[in-house]
Length: 354
Image (tube, rainbow, N blue to C red; front, side, top):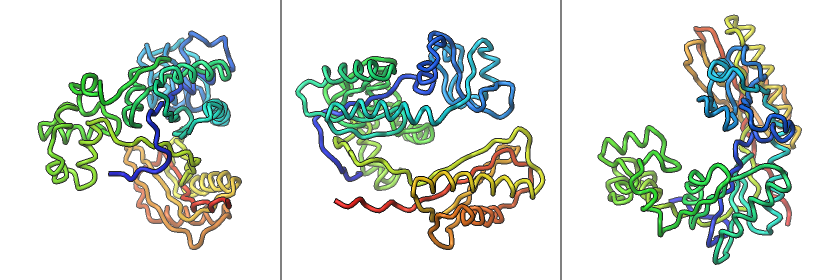
């Protein structure tokens, strides 16, 4: 079981912004409200190899979803408004929301652009949940759902029942009533592969898994994962909010090319270019690189990733470029390349002096 760190709270509120990326775009273009909006890539659905980053609820009604090729999204919903992704705008809007959450003067744990946890010891967390929704909407024009739980895991699961724009509570009292007969894959943290393995052992539902012998689960899945799966089915265990700012361990960039790359010199040139772009961006924040990784996806969609340690910790983009090319030399590329990615692994930042 994972050791808990941070501030223990009686209630955990999981705040999840509704259709976040689309909502940010609609906020700055109010005329788009109520229309199907699709965000992704350059925003041009006629271009090849671009995917949907997010879709508004109106677009989702046509079957458009994240990860879908833009061209397919266009076929499903040709009347949608297609927009390019603007990461800087989403960063800025996210900071606005997190500032609102911190204004309640309660512990806040940020999980990403559109998710955060708020902890409280109040007897009744419902007024706080509704207050968060109202203040976020008033100050940012963005709506959110709030899941309430007596553990992080229950709060996260509760949000799925609250979206969009609602509030739902899952506790020890109603957990099995709500979740017991649902498939194990409905649990946060259990993917399709693990669910299939559980089903192979006749563990089909959350209730089945919750009643399983932890020693048997340990035999099947390992001494840590096995018992943790049972704990998830019972509603989790984590009640602590980690208020320490999240610091990324790496930074990466991937590029899918309109036309496959076939010449070795062209592949090397793109790896070098992407490596310098990522390194320059991350070094501007004062971080230091220790490793570099390269991902290559061929025209057959076969994807490989290799990582190498840099000769020394560095803040020089040229060091990262040379390191990425050394990693690339370890690949045997015998097919056209459709995607290249470079990931820079970062040294932990120094602790701030107290």
